[in-house]
Amino acid sequence: RMEANLRAATADCVMADGTRIEVYANVGKVADAVKGVAKGAEGCGLLRTEFLFLDRQTAPDEDEQAAQYQAVATALAGRPLIIRTLDVGGDKPLPYLPLPREENPILGLRGVRIGLRRPEILRTQLRAILRVRPVGQCRIMVPMVATLDEVRAVRDMLDQEREALGHAPPVQLGVMVETPAAAVTADQLATEADFLSIGTNDLTQYVLAMDRGNPDLAARLDALHPAVLRLIRQTAEGAARHGRWVGVCGALASDPAAAPLLVGLGVTELSATPPAIPDIKAALRPLDKAACAALAREALAQESAAAVRSLLARAGMAAS
Ligand code: PEP
Ligand code: MG
Image 1 (cartoon, rainbow, N blue to C red):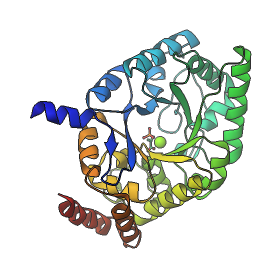
Image 2 (cartoon, rainbow, N blue to C red):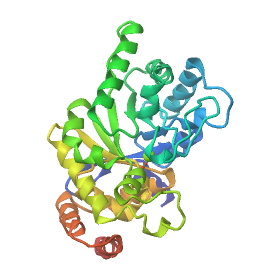
Image 3 (cartoon, helix red, strand yellow):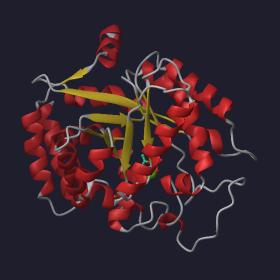
């Protein structure tokens, strides 16, 4: 029986009607990739590269980064690896990257905004990623995008670095949807991005205008708020217009009860914390896409996160 459970956990996630959902792992260090694979991850949907940059006095150089990304890629044994470019600033300062003091760091220089202001940091990272083998295993994902120009600027940098390495082959470039602007203009971003991945942690913070670090607001900072769900829907619709896939890599993707809802909203990849992976697959397998879409329609019409949550609880009982 344990063996049967293990087989089910590591098998692909195919729903009752044949719909294929990719269940990936969020990774913050090499050990997470090992754990993810053991739990049945089909790839890494979010490598938080901050782990290499935080708690030290100087930035990791290209060689060190390449070695670390390669270690994660190797641990994934050929499975896709989506590497997020450095997402610092805001609440994650670095001693060797002096930035102006800000009144509102969460609305200031963070994510791709830093990468474009300090291009040598981003270029070094892109070169390190391009060195990972086998070619084609890595994809690149850009955090905190708010406008199309930012994606174009990163794409240009990537093309230049590929050229400098002697025509390195193309790499997929994806965009994180973490700002309301990105969700609302997903149809435009999808013309430049190869895929979109929704960061529900930041998206919830920004759409509800509630600081994700404020304990007094924590109870109301709920990614199931209908406003967040409507933005997920809009993201999926915009991306579908250009044939791009949409994933979720925020914490909402690690909630097995939310998985049918996300699939119903048009999401086809879920990147979760490794321990949640078997339960997510088990929650989806007995369902079909049409039932998930009906659930999503009902959820979008709810008036609060609490109402959505109880809807999901009832739906969960019906499925089992
Ligand atoms: C998110 O914002 O949902 C996300 C995945 O990024 P992080 O939690 O690292 O900000
Ligand atoms: Mg984020």
